[in-house]
Length: 198
Ligand code: VGL
Ligand code: ZN
Image 1 (spheres, helix red, strand yellow):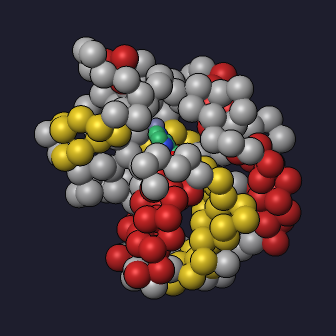
Image 2 (tube, helix red, strand yellow):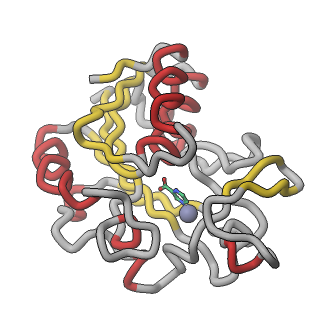
């Protein structure tokens, strides 16, 4: 088995009613379940922040969500408090078939650094360990689905392409946030990196 489906951050806080809701984020759950049923290996990621995480606007005086600040590792978009460890918002969408997952990868757990990508934290050097996991299983081909297209899905797919995997993003099984034209830029960046948009 050389193929894996990677399901990014299908959590309550990214679905309607959640702290960082992506429009129609829940509309892709049934399709993702169907895709998981067909897939070889299945990996779920789970955004998993300690309370008071440095990516939360609430931790930056006078700053609002969606503003950008400069942190020691570079530019960081600020978010509402979301996916706080062990809260309902951090749980997977209740209809997601999590039983199908071979592995659940948590990310964003270090207080001082965010982690959009499933491979590297936002300093783009601290590894999550996923690359080693996939390589040791002999997996070479990756399909990405989930939330949000223009942040965690895109950063994960771009890192995967850079690491040498054959990468596809199943766009109909993703939904985006779209901050300042980020969706259009994301599609350009993915295409330029050789990622197939399916
Ligand atoms: C995400 C912003 C902050 C995502 C996670 O899953 O795309 N976006 N944390
Ligand atoms: Zn987050």
